[in-house]
Image 1 (cartoon, rainbow over the protein chains, first blue to last red):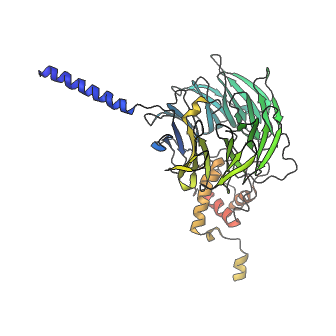
Image 2 (image 1 turned 90 degrees about the horizontal axis):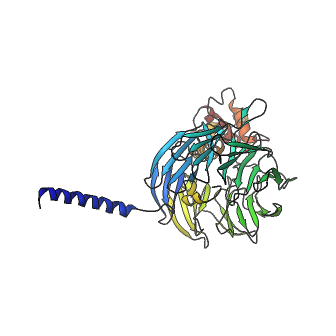
Image 3 (image 1 turned 30 degrees about the horizontal axis):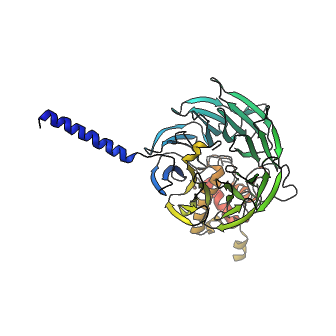
Length: 394
Length: 98
């Protein structure tokens, strides 16, 4: 072989082997997810098919109460930290793409339906900020000011709504606002008015129709039907606990993951060892379920037949499973100390459970309750699977 | 003398090392849900030494035990003893719980 040909051959060979290597590493991200290691400021990228940790990415700051949303292509996770950090993580390259410290103190965020906007809910300074999902450059700053002095309210319950809209609740002001980014330029702000005393969290139903805020300071919830011509706040489950003494609330319940099945919603009560059932069409009470402790999450298996429930300190070592048609507890077990979160695989064959103080995540068959696997992680909290990219409000 | 000692408020130093470790984990992890793991605040107020300047430890311990009526801060009495609460208050003021 002549020298020149030899070089060409070598180059071709190298190119071929690089392509072959890349070929063997090609993979989708639809079965991936992230788990927050809250004490280490890291997120671990997990493969839910292999039930394994691919890699942990460090350097995300204070991740107490951290959460994540996903890009439409399910390649990137946007992680919202307590310290105001917004971090874009590449699930394939398993690295931080970009990180911005956008506020002093934050609580969560959302991604617009077109995947172009990331909104972050802030405590300090209060309000929301909106970023370009590609560059993380700031697009809008919406201070949630209220009252005569123009104080900025902490915001909670920030969700995406169809049509490049975000809805959020003002904790201090007790109001619900919407920021509409459908048109170019400054967002259109709609103030729905007063929700009630100390709204602590909110959700939007999976069809993007109903926004519901839980109230800490009152018995009842604030509800907005976004299909109305002029959406407005009405109260549901008003005074559902009147006359009963509330228990101390050692952990605020979360509203994400409401079960909808058999025409009922199931949600955690505040300050009571109960779940509340709600008629999904009338929003009238449809029963109560007495449970082990004060529920934190009541998360529906994706088919809606069962709801998995975890509990506030000090009863946070237990999970109960409720059958929705009968409103009965059908299973109870103790995975370990400080169960913080549960996440189902997209069609609900398995469920991942973070057990913070045992430094592990357990994986269960969501129908037989058999344990399928266990992963060692450091103080794991939130578990978020990439399939959330395809769901309204998550 | 012994009688006299017994009537003195329980000293925070009486806690075992194991209990102190439990309380440390409780404050960082569970209180941290609202107050932030670095105690910079969240839904609950910030609890760094500079934030607690001018508030004495017994007042802080009282808030821990009785909560703040009308606010999400719950009363921890029943889960925490007087000595537990005082230990937490002193440790918070000393910046010893990060």
